[in-house]
Length: 351
Image (cartoon, rainbow, N blue to C red; front, side, top):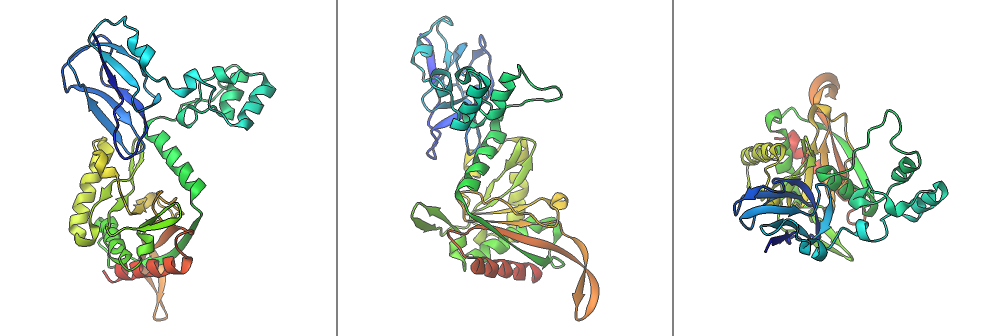
């Protein structure tokens, strides 16, 4: 009898996952604990080992499909013609129920004579988009277009950013900073340390909004945005209030390498209390970053470069840049953010 492996509960309150990549094929022999499948959640990509040894007799969930916890993913051993798992496993909602689509999209489909329940959605979690409907009505992709469904990290980013934009009323504060005293090789680490130190005096920025209550956090675990080939990842440096700049820098280098290699552990992406981001030379003068929900604020560093400044009535050249803080106006007022921002800049200028 085949062993039917179900999508396990991956913790953190997650209820579903995307099959990012199968590491086996039907008909392949696997040993117990051999790499089996990569599952993408809203936190990380997790490699799951095979729970049993035997022949991979059937794969039930295709790459890119999002399914709930408890769904049978694969049968190992037994007869490949067995249909028991297919009968028992919960199938993705879009394949057995009414397609996921907004009333507006359904109206467009009706006007164009498109049978919407027969379409494959390219939106988040398989939702049918207006573009899907119009594409079906025209008989395929328009000339010169290439359609690529949102999958993996890009899907997670899209959903996360949409939620933050939907739920957080953002305001961005911007100020200039003199970076002459900062070791540019350790710029991000220095900013992270300055933020961790000053957050202790501004607890409302090291917090999160939980329904009708503000939850203040007594730990200073700073997320740092890292650009990878798969998209933007935010690994977390723990206990930044008790670490030195050198210690934070060394940890950031290691986390960034693992992020780009796709080898970060799930726990390295969880539980940040505040986020710092810097796009380096590509950063432009400044950014208006999106709050990393459910956090309250995010600080970004624009491009640091030599610019003219006025000191004691004289024009000089100095290494300057802009510090921007986007914050959730439901939790904190602009005056407090300005005080925090100026305190961080004071530390950087006196570093």
